[in-house]
Length: 73
Image 1 (cartoon, rainbow, N blue to C red):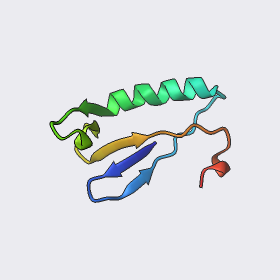
Image 2: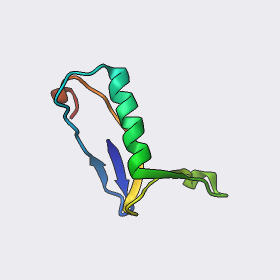
Image 3: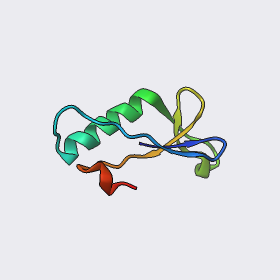
Image 4: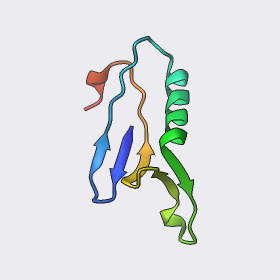
């Protein structure tokens, strides 16, 4: 997961799974996790639209699914 804190820090949070999964399963999990930890907000200024973390710390920027963690640097 890629999370951007309001102080400008980009956090790459790696989740490891106990069983193999397809890229579609990973993407579906990421979508569900995003819905659980963030809420989409719309503003008059469209540049501010996005998924804001429910704990108030920043925004959800995206996710990367990979089979080999060493491929993600």
